[in-house]
Length: 114
Length: 115
Image (cartoon, rainbow over all chains, first blue to last red; front, side):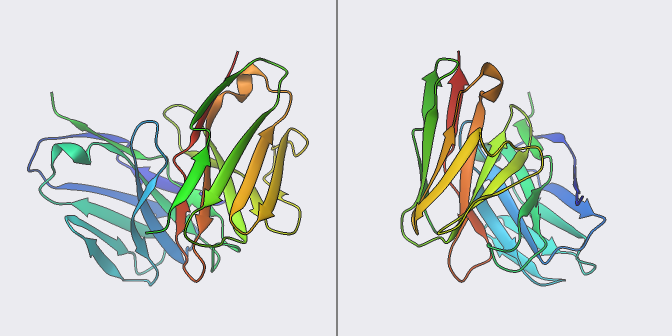
């Protein structure tokens, strides 16, 4: 079945640093989504990407839909303590929520450097 | 953004009992909703697709008789865990795509603990 490889698995951030994470797949996706999940909460949508090559920003977050439709990255600039959490990429093969199930990456856990 | 709610947020039940979890789309209608399960420190795994007016579609390995899904209206889907066992303890999350959009919005999740 379709799988997403998300990396890194975890990383430590210091306030002010830029952060980058990415997802790759052997299959093509038509939509890429990036979510953040805090402990005990459901995932919150950060950015949605619909077109190959699309680059979209949401505040300090920037994400791109790879031109091959098989990858995406998420960048966080000037990180702040509240950026801590688990970030998931998700790919959707079909068009429309009723057709395409989301395939999730395993997540990237952001923690604060001790 | 779209809002999806879940109730209850957490529940503790005894082994052998049944538990119902509700998922509601608060400001939009959803003909389709999705139910996920998440174990600690793991990603979300799709359990089933809930379809308003028709039977739910279950993922491979998910017992449909154990996890009963009812999409009662365009804003409500329920997941009932029947004859719960300790191994059913998990974080259950629903999601719904807002009409006309491709992205899915998630509920806050329900923590189920079976003793």
